[in-house]
Image 1: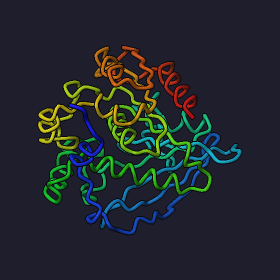
Image 2: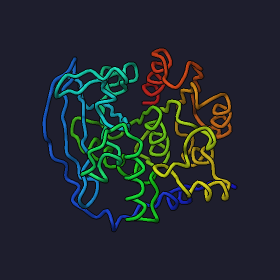
Image 3: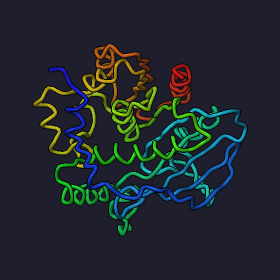
Length: 295
């Protein structure tokens, strides 16, 4: 069964009426890093909720910059440190996609995922997966037609809006990149948002059986409907009209993922580093090179 974009969007179920709210972001703070300036925003992502956003701009810039959206759990992770305290985050060493791409001349943006924003009074640890369960349950109770993946894609579209509205950025030269959960979001947002010219995903689980797609913060019970309708990620990729994609496979993604990419007849680069979940520097650099070539 051939997938259509509308099939996917209908299952994700974005509700524009429910999300009719003032989306004006507020600049909260600025900082400087090694070769870049940073800006921290409070961006509305619902009628009563907000996501904290970090935007990095290269200091040495000429003309309008290419832009990169880097979805993940929270933006500091993709920097490898907290810019307000300079506290290092060693757990994320080596996958700081924001730092890697800003040093390549991209304006880069990242924000919080909805497990941190949908229940703003929740004080549990940001890495606690029970927090994902509570946020997913609240979302499902409020909007049963939605699913977690739909909320992740919607919030990423808001990041993209903010980046495109920045006068320093060329909205015609946008890419999206992500690792793990960020790779899942990058794949869906990259496929469904025409503003992105290329996609970089790292070990996100190209096949539904390769990762935790049935968890409520992704597809939940709707995964059964996807399978019943014969929908898979190769089909979603085909709806993009040959949009360039690079997949870095390491643990959850395997040679089978490469076969799915190839079956979509897409403009792709498949890198199977096979060194575990986190990509090594040489694999990441191949992915970044791929993005730059597409622009």
